[in-house]
Length: 132
Image (tube, rainbow, N blue to C red):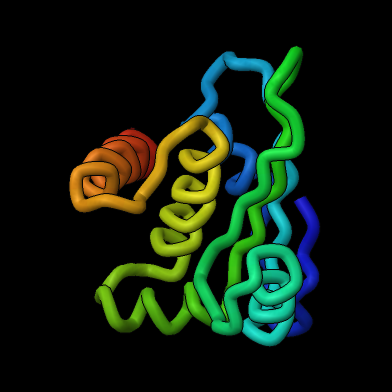
């Protein structure tokens, strides 16, 4: 985990728990990087050719023998979305980390059906995290 955001901090142990919630015992090396909106837009533009800010971006670097990937979480958007969705910042950050990890695990959210399946997986992971 790497925190590149200047004002907000996230506890490493929590982030490790979010990643483990998705991958369980599967061998995976996932780096989670917390960024601000400016850096997120720059990453999105440079690597995905999208000229806008988003809340989470993930890159799969390797799938075999061990899954390796990076998840970039925009903490500015996480804070704003937590207010918008009336959830805690911790909950929204967890959702974004889980969402990015689900992409690395093979989920997609291009179609309505894919979005529904991904949302169900997110909700299940969040429920397991915050009710145990």
